[in-house]
Image (cartoon, rainbow, N blue to C red; front, side, top):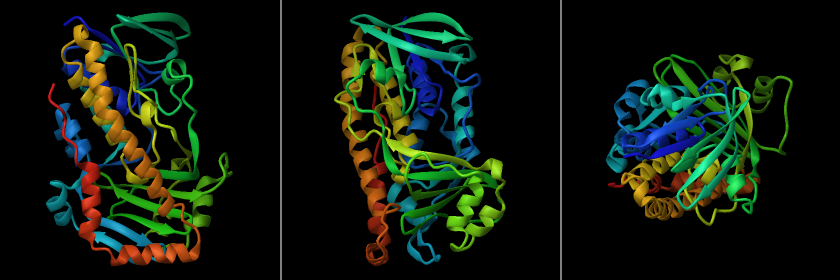
Length: 386
């Protein structure tokens, strides 16, 4: 095969796409605007769909070895009362596996190490992408110098505010504020804890054990966009310091410099297609969703595996391959994006005390197997055959 694919963006989705195409016989170049490849201090909960995709990429065993395999956890109120609880055995029987908690940087490094080093180009800011019937060009600036790459295929994996999407899908509305801001940190922690999300009025706090000795926590509140505090950790303590144990202890074990804060944005309008000529979008560039179902990274991995399988025939059959990719991925990802937005409205964003009480009561009265069936529906995906 003599196909060349340029992947714009060196995050998890971009590296997964590059690896999928590389394993399908493509020559791959990854353009990442940052001076160094890396990921920030946050955790990921990988369900069975993501793990199947990583197995298809040949890195599943390494991911399991670097992460924490478990499925115990559930939902709690801000006082600590369990609203819904699931043990690992129950999740295994319903989903076929337990969940893997892993640091984003570890997953990123595993994907990076599986690629040829020469495929990765950092400090490469993409300025424009053009596409025609037989290929595409990527105009970029690397180390401050202008450059152009010709490609048979360009993959836009450059995130929420994608340059590729803005150039070739100019009529798509920009990302929309989801109504919440979130803090997160990955810290040292030795005591065993379950994976859990705790809900209050217009707020939630989640914890995810990672590899031994580490835990990831996040906190989200309904708030106007653009807010910042001189001390973000102090802001989290002010809002969540009186919530149930071990939340105060987790915050006490966190250093201020470990805390990241980001407003939550998503693509509220689904794209009419993820393909334009010889350019395909994936991950947040195609379907940035709210985090309430924990499926953002998993969907990028699914995208990558599906694209690699569809394009296994090389450039000669690329138009049909990209049409298959779009038809396989757009309905599922856009349905999940809508479901995630709904989950936020009935979860973290719910504020009225009566509505919160009714929701919590309904969850307590719902058998855990029902919630597991819902999770199983989201994780019910298998890699396609080439």
